Amino acid sequence: MLLIRDANENDIPAIESMVADFVKGHPAENHPRPSQVLRSAYFGERPVAHMLVAERNGQIVGMAQWTLIHDMFWGMFGAGCHLSGKAFQVFAKLDGLPPREIVRSLPARALGLQPAEP
Image (tube, rainbow, N blue to C red; front, side, top):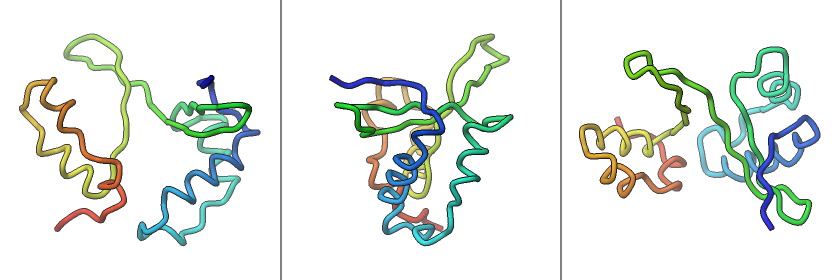
């Protein structure tokens, strides 16, 4: 059974391990990511985002981060997500398409590991 829950400071080693695995092949692969910075960013006085973890049989197998946003034009809350590299460029080209087509055309996860094109 998969359990989705709020991340906490005890999850930092598992989160760091997942980030290290995800960043392989990315230009930031060898960039330092101190535990204290992660702790401060997500579990400090002013967290930058909410983090959830997915747990199966007591082991963390996934994570997601999100930020709460408020759309002043529509007067409603939503959530923001983050894309990087080529995935962002593919997503940006979906502008103006109907929502169903956007969902069907979301970029593959692997594109987030590829550098953006000039």
